[in-house]
Length: 105
Image (tube, rainbow, N blue to C red):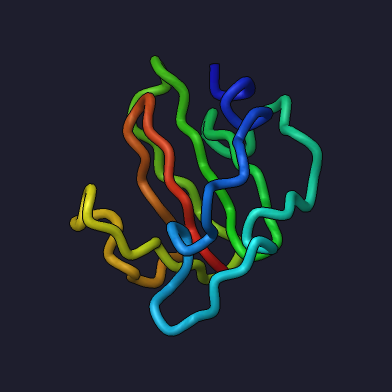
């Protein structure tokens, strides 16, 4: 399921949904830097890198997992889950099973 999700991630209608405040919206946020992944990255969590962002997906049944990021990324600023989507810098993230997260560079 996670592999299928990462393989079919569409380009969002606007990159503004995954940009940090004060940055310019750009479709390059979603330019994939690698083909769709077929193997887990860390602790059973899948990761796909894009030009200015990464997406992590923790599949159903994998339990809550913490992964260490190679560098500092930022959570998006959003209203759906403001406790998570709070524009905070992160060097590691914790994902519940069947959860995903978009982080910007």
